[in-house]
Image (cartoon, rainbow over all chains, first blue to last red; front, side, top):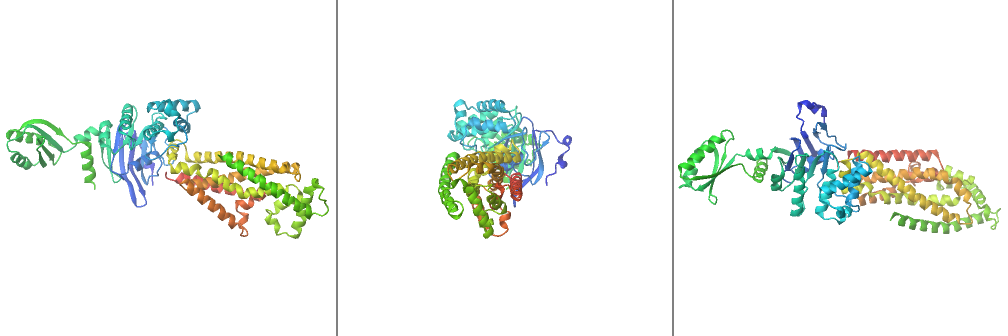
Length: 326
Length: 263
């Protein structure tokens, strides 16, 4: 049972753009989303990632009021999201598998949706035109029937409908899925243009895409949130350190053996191709000391230091996080 | 598309009226001895007499003609037998036609998930009410055209007095608004409950036929829409009550369903 009174004290909460508090959704015995808590700050472009069935689309549907939460509550700029109530002025969404009526033109559909959103005739026309221009669709495509447009163009029209409102938080559920690389790049460019001006949640299976455009990331697995935060912090938080060497040490095996003996070190590998020493720490605390100790050992073994890189790509982080919780 | 279907329907219905017209009126003229076959202007008077005799001798036929209220207007001469025939035929045809024009109104939007775009902006109840009103208006306009064309066709017959037709028109059309609304609500109920669209059509038609068949059972006919259609068109209050109940029931259930349906 959702009780907003449990979360009603606005002052006790940070006023983020989106606040999701212990939200759960079950379908029969299946827990699609389980006690998920997530805050998305104002102006963030938050990437939502997770394997298939992680609960991303369910979370979007809960935010839009399409699904009734089994427990928990959600707030948009402090206002609760209520199941069945249209979140006009709060949330604009590109649902993953919803289709637009093929017999109508892109402009007609957008005008209709703008009117449903409360705009009057002329205003709706103007806004529909503006939105289509923003997604790069010209007059010709605007007049075409939806069924005559390419998949990428239809996707743009669907994204254009998220721009019909004012200052709404935009949720894009896999906007680049099934879209050719050029169109995907253009869609990403479009999203990047809105970064900072609008709060956006963007789900994708393309982690490079998320890494290249998002400011924040939330990783879901099996309906739970396994990690979230600013992308940079998340990558920095990584316990893996890679030390590239301009000149390898005389005896890499001896060097590795000595590094392994350090108490802060969990694992260590020698990457011959680079050459590179990659090690992971037991704990992030005191990581600077540990890195200094490793560097000293490398110098001792006549290695010449190159770059020191902390963390891993989002992809590796994602794999690690989703494997750990399996 | 709709108009092509309905024009064809009108033509077919009109033709069948024409043929049936001669058949009925010939039968009426032969049956009523005081009126000569050449005295065709008094055919409604003849009909009145036939119905009086018929219902006196065979009271069980009253229910066949649509109940006591319908029998009364027929024996009073307030309803032309040909209009009765048109209405009787319409009561079999219209529910299916209303279902055919409206079965996909919501089920298409729900199965294609276009409703997601809509429900981000509109209250579900408002959307459903809009769909009901839109379909009702379409049904009223289309069936008004069909009905008027049908009436025009039969009024060309020398057996029919136009005054009898026009005098019953108000009662018939008051009933027709309610009649169409009830079936539109029923159609929307099917449309919101069953997806994809063809399932709502198939189930809707099956259920309509099943209820039609159930009407042969005594007392069931007092509660089902189909059997109350003729009394409704002649302004029977009990029929209005049955139709109002059905409108509230199906519309209410449709609203409840759309509210609770996770999309």
